[in-house]
Length: 330
Image 1: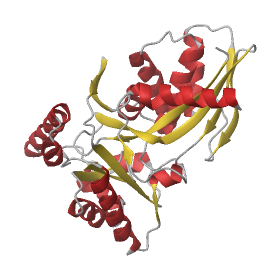
Image 2 (image 1 turned 30 degrees about the horizontal axis):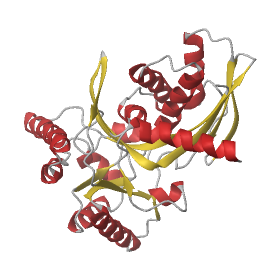
Image 3 (image 1 turned 90 degrees about the vertical axis):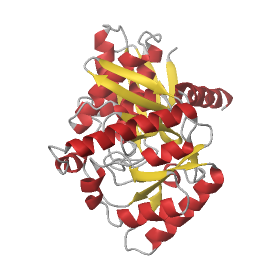
């Protein structure tokens, strides 16, 4: 294989109660990337569209991952890559993670698929560190594994793939404000009470149990964050109003996607998800904050409501196959 075009999904991290440990991939929002083998060793970014990102291969989240992987195996070829960002950096939907995870997946294919998913996650975490300063795994693991994931341990790294109930839907809305990850982390409490810790642990357990048993009531009751949301929500204007409108419209729960400012809501079924989206949209119309449906920002023809991507194969591999089939037909 000398050429590959892939899709790298957006992701929602934390999922309310699972700070830095839970994440899930979204089915239709994401980036498209191409990888071309070259006789000349090294890595080169030949084109970036959709966002103003650096072409410096030592500073870009994607190219740093590819470079590290090629050096790891002493590859006798190089790779040129292009990146089309399908959603906004700084949205809280794992923009740098999509670049890093997509880079790890794509480079691995050209290398003969020699690395397992856990190793790909480690490479992608390196890209996250370059982009954000912290090698967090929840976004990149969700993009690589697909569906819901639990980062059970960082040392050693252990990723657990979780099931996704078939009717689970996500609504994501992106208020047009900028929040830097370092700022969102700076407002977090250094210590929490034992009471809050117990509440958070119980909610994580409840959410995971709900995913395994298709218990939507349990999922709903567990989507509560007493650690990060109380301080981070202050960075997002009208957060309480928007979250309240989503829950009033039938959402299982709502919270901050990653560091924000995107607000996500999990819903049961398309009908409820549509009602939730309409309610959230209306609540933001009554403010002076511009907003954008995250899906429409990614693709003007995309559906408003998206599934939580159930498997890595459906997230990346099937989309990659379809893209490559399009290339052959063109």
